Image (tube, rainbow, N blue to C red; front, side, top):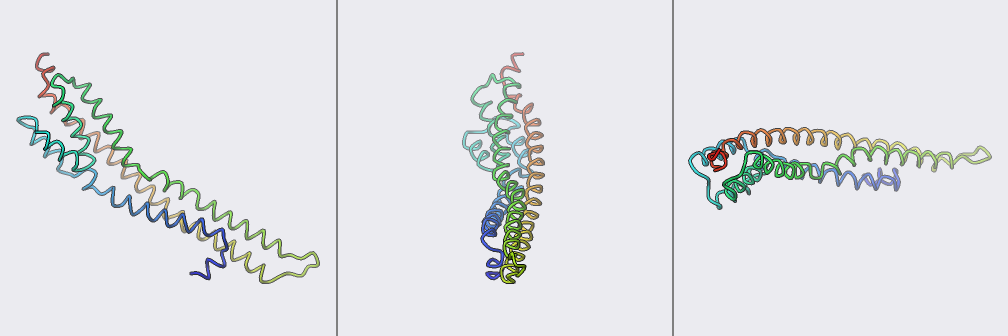
Amino acid sequence: MFSIIQAAGWPIWPLIFCSVAALALIVERLLSLRTAKVAPPQLLEEVISVTRARLPSADVVKKLGDNSILGAVLASGLRAVIAEPRLTEAALRDVFESSGRAAVHRLERYLSPLGTIASTAPLLGLLGTVIGMIEIFGSQAPTGANNPAVLAHGISMALYNTAFGLMVAIPSLMAYRHFKGRVDAYTLDLEQACARLAPHLMRFSTSRSAG
């Protein structure tokens, strides 16, 4: 491995840094975007069951908010209804929307750097290729005599950097697209959960009773 790095020259070091960063981001997103941490399947049903007769206590709402990202969004609606008994449905939906935007921002965390690595790695590989080609042409003597060592180093630099750039970019792009799809799916789950819980919570609003 060290001999490959030597043959590739200094342009490969930014690619090595990108590969380490991409691996760290992928592992972090794999752990953070698990279903249990974002949107547990039965959480909404449990919330509806607990609030069927009355609003829960502050401790229960806090535990719900700490449960998952979906739990934090649902807890924001519960806190709003508890804090303001005359809350209108439009205001409650605004609370859910605001909390949902913050949740989506958390879900998309680190995706932008991962996408940047996926798009930048081939360019860094191309940079190494160009530098290698410059060395190849620089090894051509005016008399026609070539320096085989410099020529071989230039070819190695060009090929290794191109290959390594693609090796970093391809899995990074695949991971970025995968995580982006999961975020979109989770966003839809959050929207549907809020749309279902909002009219359920409005049963406790005195504004509806007064109307």
